Image (cartoon, rainbow, N blue to C red; front, side):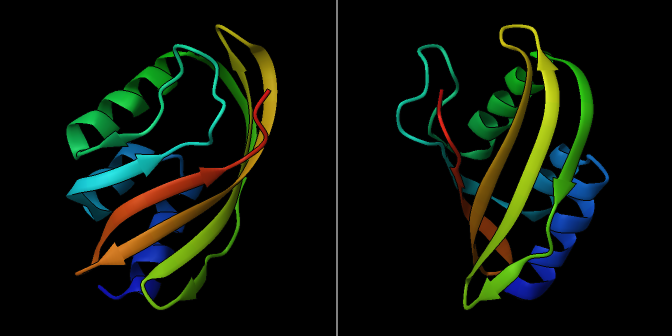
Length: 123
């Protein structure tokens, strides 16, 4: 798949709430996941490799009490990169209800996501 195809598939899966399937299908084994600086202690931060990304996702999912809504924009693609605006309105065990919006930037190499980085307000 080229970058446009990877981007469109990731968006389609995320819109269905199939984040784990997106990772399994589209990510390279050595992919990196980068969060914003200044996260509270105990929050999943930067990780490398699919095992660590899966664990990060598992912890995030376990913390969710209820999802009230969400959104995923169409991708903006250039070269090996694409970005997507995502939003989620969820109630978390440790933070209560908290709507969040972010820009997600992805790098694709050889038809797989090798890097994801998230930009959002912290605290």
